[in-house]
Length: 341
Ligand code: AHR
Image 1 (cartoon, helix red, strand yellow):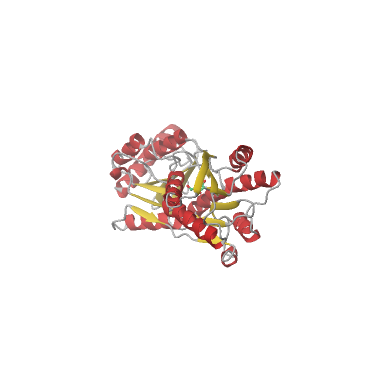
Image 2 (cartoon, helix red, strand yellow):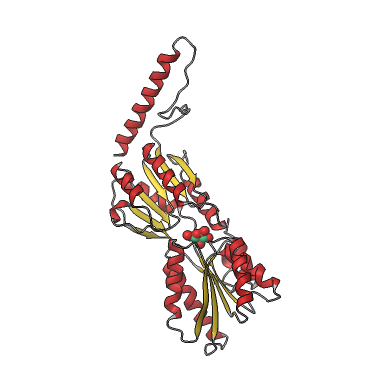
């Protein structure tokens, strides 16, 4: 299938060059153009063409995730990467995928902002015979064959680990019989990471009769919204014991809001965060964040590995999870030297 698409791309490029030659004969050296009339000098048809649609750049994690893709899909590694940043809009992701289909790329990789609303465009990719690899987040579709595989985090496990850690910590502090008031800053509504972390954490909440969730609110994975929502909740609820913040960026904003009202994050309010980016690990070390559940953004290598398997005609699993850790003040020093994001 890939060979066929390569041939089709080459034919289209040759026709375009011929058309240009006819029009330009006698005018000097002709330009090389591809099927879209773009400069094609130096284009290598042995490269595997990968179209990537990224959600946006809402978080430090996301920037690291993008970098991991750009690093691995290089010409040196045999790839031509076409990258699009959807700036947080599903319609932009759909447009990017449609443009990858019309460019006849070899693989489409994308991180769906939300789970719903992909059936039509994924059917178009399927009809064009282009394998789709989901990265980071998943889709809810009527037909699972609309995507080949997905590579990402086990968000439900992250949520459960957060709940388990909290139960253990409260016990260590001798607070297991106290009423524990919890507020939750959730990520983007409808995103796999939001669903999974919420579901996993709530499973543990159900086992704890004295934990009370005061509110779960959408703060869209951003620092600005995290601060705004935390400020509001601090006014609304006088006695917040725990903040569960579904990513580090929202946590940074929430910590600012907590400090503004003269409270100590990590002491007056227990802070549970997700991602584990460097500046958050520094806060774990400083005791402002009590636990950080890693969400591993280094997914490029794993996506590339799956593509290599497909290129070799090997069968792939429907889903792959990246390895992840739990960071606390006790172990965080061991991981800070290697962090690049
Ligand atoms: O889907 C992964 C989440 O999206 C990360 O936790 C968050 O930081 C990102 O924006």
